[in-house]
Image 1: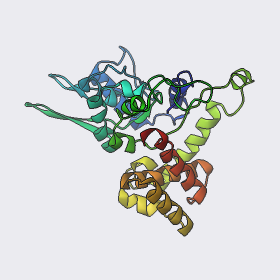
Image 2: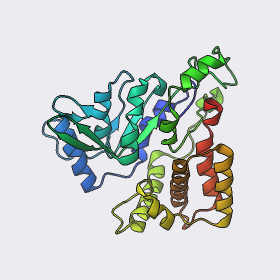
Image 3: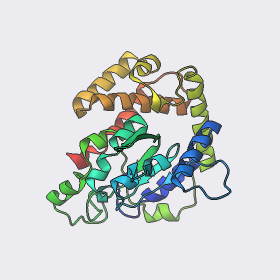
Image 4: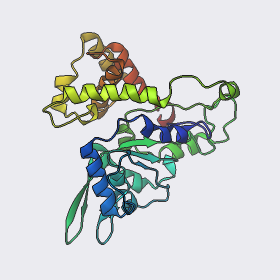
Length: 292
């Protein structure tokens, strides 16, 4: 999420766990084991019943984020297993700290090797990140003037490397909230209604992947992607055009298909249409105004 200060990026990130499906029994056991090993499970607590939400400060070290120490213990990526890891003010994190996120984001595990032992911790989490578009926070803001020079903006956003950005499926602009919108009566869907739609989409995915040892679209392998994400000729042309025009990578191609499959599931559609492909492509192209 990219937007000026006060646009609601942090508030939205904190609401994401409220619309996620409830923990399954197996997920609750996994999460409880990790929290117990890390020593963060409260005394007398049974199974962890809610999805974890972890929001480490930007001064965190490699070991704090990934795990480590003389006797290796889980880091924030493992404590967020089956839940949400939120990184606020993303460019403020040290670049070497962000780069170690590549393996857990891609593989869902993190391996810590020491002379005496090598340990692998689970780390399958949803990554959410928020940042300002520039140091002052008002680049592209229609109501306030940006005081940053182009080199300042470029240095700021370049702290997020291309390979890491490529692993983030959805990039969205978060414009400042207008006064009239801020003061109007609440409208739209509540978290309960949204969660119901998400749970129905997850149920479709669980049914689709029976026997595949996965339970969500994000976990599909390349072979499963070809099997479950067949698209029409019109979708093929649209995706090919976007890949060529935006210079997207093979990883982005796979992730666009996974996101479009999820959008179709949320719509209750059996097959992926051009509307679903278009929306998924749009989520990959919004960052271009900042990183080009």
